[in-house]
Length: 166
Ligand code: FEO
Image (tube, rainbow, N blue to C red; front, side, top):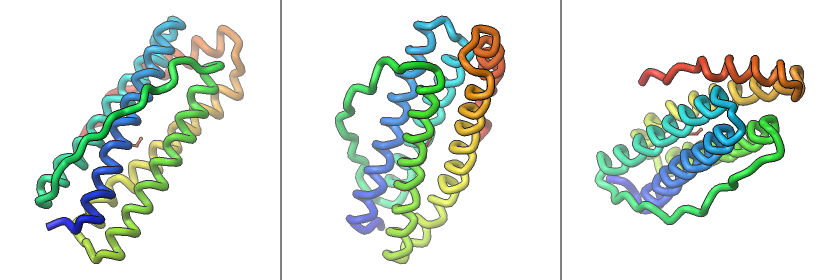
């Protein structure tokens, strides 16, 4: 059985994952509006992954006898200055998500909640991978600049992203 403080914290993270999905969907829509279909496709996949992350928390809370509590969500931003600005915002967002996961691990340990600790390790690893892949895109966008050719090459590369296997 989950302790109330763990139930609350897991619910918070679940809602943050769904918020991430909403943010990345808005970024996908932004790219679609710019005819950058590869960038849009990358963000669509990212959004879907965040829904899957949220559902991992949803299922775990249930499995542990807790109650899932969905919250209202603020509208995400709709526009950004440039593709680089989108990915910089993504990295900042992911760093916040990472901090949330780490705080959750600390809370699980404080409560000697070993199942939560084990459950959260997947997310600890996932966040390393997420931050690294977003940072890689940022560095490439910086190298290529905003010239049409570099942007279109990046669009093609990002459009080749395949869905993550579970
Ligand atoms: Fe589920 Fe990108 O954190």
